Length: 402
Image 1: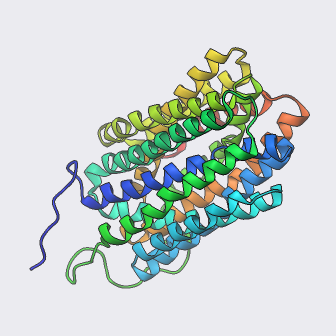
Image 2: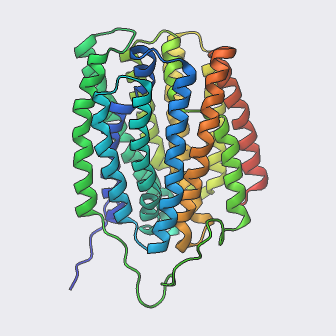
């Protein structure tokens, strides 16, 4: 007789253990990849257009694989093996950042890491959605996002300590400092894979009732209603102004922040992200996802306007805190909204399309941001992003229904 596992925090244990996997992975990723824009600009001397290219192209690579892996997880009715494969590929890629000496090498390593992330993300999100009921979906994704972001806080706190010990309060990132971040950062990435392998269970379909055991339809866009497609269109509009967060980091340095201060600002960002994720998810279970997402985009627009006009360091600290609130309000709720809008047997494909639209739009968004920064001013990308966020907010309230 197979024993039923007890719930953790009132939810299926899969949600908690997937949160642990994401926590460990984020400790690693924040230490190794968050400061890549400073590594490119300070150590390798790359221009902002190159920074935008590396950020945008790697995210777009991620997007293509998210689409494919989500579709494949629906076809084979297995989420976990793809998640394991994706986390393993990212773990293998990370140590090579220790040897990177050109922006091309950084791009190649980021490509490998993003391939792994692309393979794992849609099946993992589908695992979360499969493990919770509709009435607790917001809470489930909120908890997962909160744990994921707690890993970012821990990773950035460790990074700040290492930076301070190696180079003190210097304004530019040094090669030696970055290499130490890579060495320490690979450890939690290695630990994440066994947690996924041994503690997360694939949901087994019953032979009677529930979802049909037949393979879902092959087409990527078949089986989805107009509401889901309109939501993806509105997400594309928003993301076109939501360039890589590389530019937020460069803006902080542009306004006089030292490397240690930039990292501590990111710690603050992730704390507010983690604190707001679960309450926002629970609120969306009560009030509806659409309204909560619209509020989050409104916050984003105000934050980007703030980054455009900021001139004092204290303002940057405040903006990073508010930026985390936007992420906490929107990230988990948007993923829960996807599950609300699509059939259960198409969830993997739906998450692939959702992440694919976001990721593919990030490439032109980041290239536009890099061009605006160089051609006009460091404030220009943020004015552009704020304007598109207002448009997206109007779009989701006007054309997308719950």
